[in-house]
Image 1 (cartoon, rainbow, N blue to C red):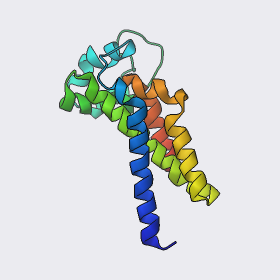
Image 2 (image 1 turned 30 degrees about the vertical axis):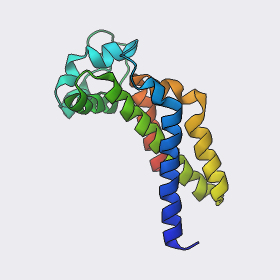
Image 3 (image 1 turned 90 degrees about the horizontal axis):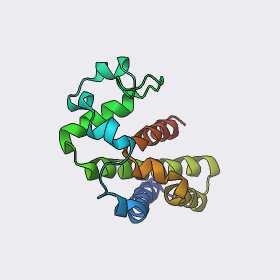
Image 4 (image 1 turned 180 degrees about the horizontal axis):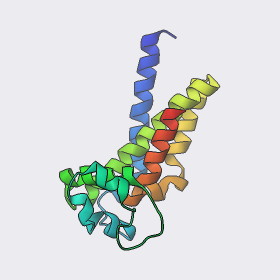
Length: 157
């Protein structure tokens, strides 16, 4: 396989992951904020401004709960998105869907590198994207922390 075929295969895999994620999760995009999404995104005054340093020193739940949960990258991503979407839940869900598709593509790249089989890489990406275990991370806006963790993990690997 020459390098341009490899590039085309990689782009096709990305499109495939986007298509699969859209087929599986597009029906959830128009949902309103639910459960923790309300406290962490919709009603969270801390994400109304983009201030990366503040997220490094504040707990995930803000002043409401001191459970020791620390997710500064998630809160920072919500603040960046708030500047785009305001309190429009579908925008935040669309980002989750795109992150999930990106993670599926990273699984494809990882599997292709580890297994050396394009067919196995396609199968691994498809299973990752459509597996129902991913539903909460994609559909719940606060599942962003899991999606970002997966992105960083797959990229580092």
